[in-house]
Image (cartoon, rainbow, N blue to C red; front, side, top):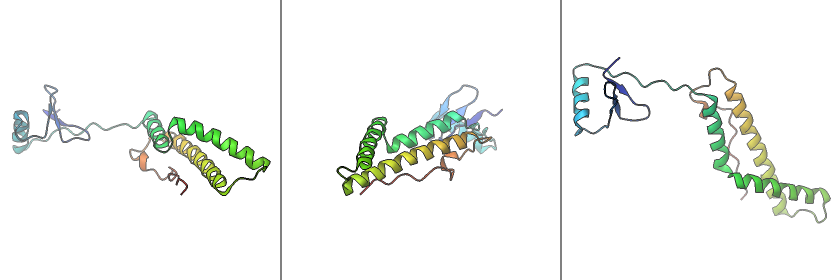
Length: 147
């Protein structure tokens, strides 16, 4: 074990003896000691590997869906789609062009959400879950709102 350890997603270093986090500031006295330690040929311990879990995938899936539709929007969209579907079924009066486009969008948005949830289930079933799961090609493209 080294005297220092790299910190994930940061330019800081951890002193393994004291637990202090050392900023990347050349004026910081602990950073000066670290830089001198490196200068004589020492190497800090690498960043601990991150083990991706189903919780990581679930959180990403939730944030992906909520980035498009808030919880309230999802509820309202479901209700709005039902109203338009009933009107479309009865055809009395027929849907306007705008209503038909809105219904198409709401239905495609629901299909996108279901495809996103299926991608989430598929990725969670992988063993191990890939580190780059967020860019996995199984995620559906984001829906395009109507013009």
